[in-house]
Length: 354
Ligand code: COI
Image 1 (cartoon, rainbow, N blue to C red):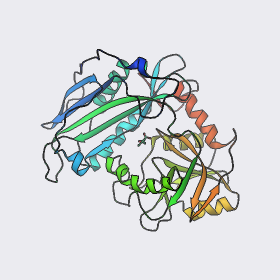
Image 2: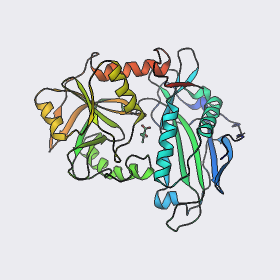
Image 3: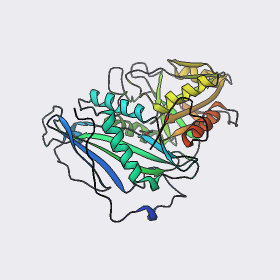
Image 4: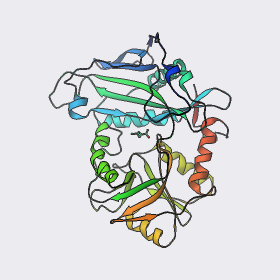
């Protein structure tokens, strides 16, 4: 397999940078000037290019559109205190992309090609990386089938792409969530651990029902007993129960979140007890009733650390105590921010300079 490919660069003749209000960025609405793409054909990656961001032509018969052979990643680049730009744990996303690719019968991509496309794209669109606190450049690598064929079998050809968006907060206030005990996101042995498009499409209907009831997101539970916490919306879920950091253990139905992994590492650094295990809705609600549910929050690349203010359970809403600066979620969010912006020591070597 060829590890590094020459990338043909076609710079835009008309940058859209000046049209973007960098003081009021919303998530996912503004797209940087360029996008990277590379095609998989005849058993190898070829035709790597960076072109102006825009629409493209694909076969209407491709297996991504019909059978969901499509996967993606979410990652971020941060403006550094010294003015440079650095990526947060990009190799974790590369590894997870390949694990999703294997699950969906798609080709893997080499670390070198992934990092080469990513780095050249970010360098070209370097001015799009926001510098205001709390803002970052969201990066969306993705891959989809491109064969024009509607038989049900893995496609022979694919396209891998990356585009980027300067973003602000995904959620701008503490969340109202409720346990989902009817619909399921994923079952043991399914593809819930993979970041394939279908997982997200199938979650929209139950989420919409909850949103119609005034919740922002769901807390998904397991497919067999509808009791054990899986994830919250598009985030992993973490609880602080009686001072211990408790989160569902990874399984084939839970996404192995990079933010989850980072928050747990920082919790251990802070000397806290971390428990990765089964967590039932009953345990969470009993802790709440006993005044021992100190905190609940979602963690994800887009969402960062999203505090949960209210949990709905069996038709009733329960409020969590307001957090102050000593809360774990606040301390860990500050510690992560310091690492990401280069203001704090990167003791785990998570940051990669562009
Ligand atoms: C991310 O946090 O990057 C995600 O993938 C969630 C997304 C679907 C907005």
